[in-house]
Image 1: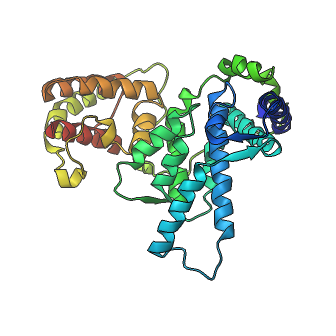
Image 2: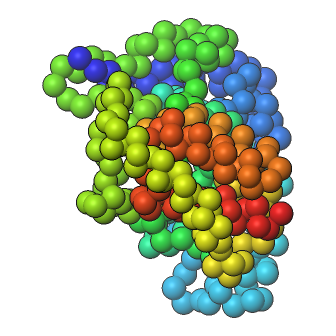
Length: 358
């Protein structure tokens, strides 16, 4: 029996919290100003989401007010519009009734981000409703997030490797799914925020889940398969690794052959700067794109992100190629890598290119 998020319970709690915190703020005030929103309550994430939601509503109202009879893209109009927006943003004033609605939504989004970050980020991407998304727009979202922020950080770091200023929405969603799969162990423990909520309005966070006997559970760690990620071919797909590996004499001999050719392979697998499309890098991770990282972790490190991360860190600490080769060989034997697979060759090439550029 799995846990599914109880949206009704979250909505009810968010409404109650909003009414209570707003009442506490408005005993002698009629409106709340922009700077006051940033310190509205003791929960920073709710405060940041208040600004985010207000900005989104403002942007939507601006777009809705545009007349089809005028050229809003003309440089003069754009400049005047920007000046108008800048002045207006310095004079935020929200009444009590409107604030209750904003706080309710900010609280609701905070809880979803905490309990189901995958769903939260997918919803944020879906809000764009466009075929492409500007990277700058994604960076705007990041400014408002302090809980489970690693997922968007990792996504933006990977997108920064590309010179493109926009990314197709479908590709963005696929990239995020990969990022989440790789980092899903980093989902924050929601129970750590119980006391933070209790200060505003007491709650048992467990009430935000309901037991479902037959439906697929919605948990912070999505098990949704990623079917649109390039993977290895049938010939390259490894067999299941047994818990206890028993090797025959032929397999031992094959490993020795692999080891003998590893040094030659290391020397031959050099990228030029044009091949690798990079300048000097201070991290091997920066040279590994999302698809490669996903394949390396699953095909070479048995799905263990921590093991992959540790191996890369150890490689980066080494001073020369002989040490790198020895470390690579130790890992190959330990995890049973085959030098002829694409994943092994690609990882070796990236490491080689990294040291060539140092």
